[in-house]
Length: 237
Image 1 (cartoon, rainbow, N blue to C red):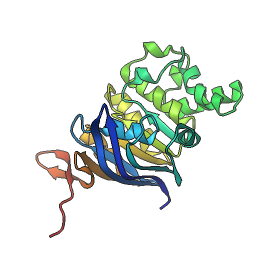
Image 2 (image 1 turned 90 degrees about the vertical axis):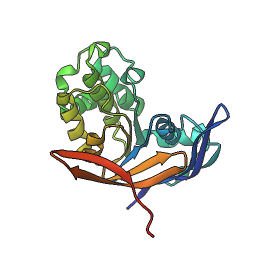
Image 3 (image 1 turned 135 degrees about the horizontal axis):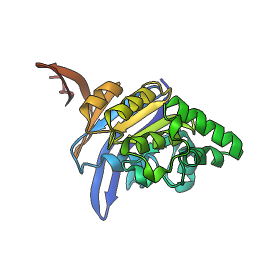
């Protein structure tokens, strides 16, 4: 498989404190990789570092075969990556839904008409075309999440970085979110505490801890109902 993202011995500091250490990871085309772990271990920082919003103290971030160390290098690769922030309100900034989703395509050189057409088609594919003329600040939590995702998908990225994508999402909009991600042709790197969502979406999982990032198994325990769990892989004796 084509390698899209590689992290080599990544170390990230904040205010002199180590947030990430010894992080090794490869994301290949078509993979849907879930990163799980306790609060505060650095999962969001990991996504932000891949997107070039934070810089490592040591190690490498390689995006689409290009080692990225400076903003100019990240800027070249950033259009190929869609980053869904943990808080939707941090991502929505245009008055109406259609304007917000069209903003990215407009910045790629499309005319305003072309960008709005692209936005309308993306909203329709997500099943939220009826939201096009709504004010973004009056949407429900689940609607905001889908509009944020639409803004990313309209850019036709190769990779989606998803930070707690089910935050504030109700069952109806959650079903639309799952469908959109399962039919997305690119690769996905997602951070989530929602184990049901992870087992639905992810084809692979890794656990982040102070010791680094390690492969995990995704499976279900059969009780009186199916209850999904993620466990680190045990080393072979």
